[in-house]
Length: 196
Picture 1 (cartoon, one colour):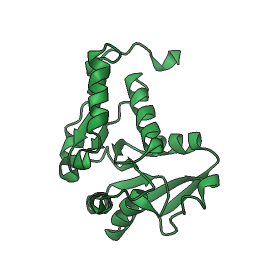
Picture 2 (cartoon, one colour):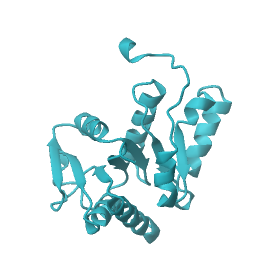
Picture 3 (spheres, one colour):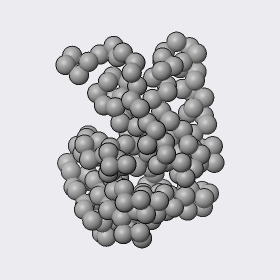
Picture 4 (cartoon, one colour):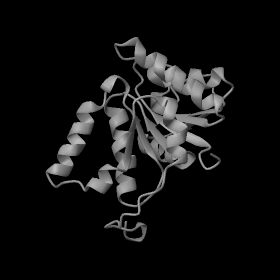
């Protein structure tokens, strides 16, 4: 597990309507802290973002938040993190989270979470990185997205092997074994890093 020292978690700054989401996010944080895996996330103290951070901190885990300066008040910065990195833009936030992380876990969220997910999976498709991307599909939240991805494949807009870059789990209990068994795609990419 040494190659997975830090995991970026993308998730909502809202709690969602079902209390399950907040509880599951806290438990994911506990899971990371217990296994001494650092959490990298968006730096807020509210919603699922705050819950996963608090869970990790409760087990003396390492938590790094990355927060754009203009969102400092709006997203209510978490003031008990091991490290809070303030950046100038959303682009800088995503790049910093990417650079700090060895894998990506996607929890329920809104447009921002989707933007983060689609960017990191697109980079993987282009061969710009080979880090694992895992969706935690709590309560079937991402079923419509998974249906859309399959529709992209069946309609000829996405290769099946690229759809398989995204791994889906129903709970966090198999997260470590999924990471340990991860092997980067050997599919030949149609772009190389040198041409981007």
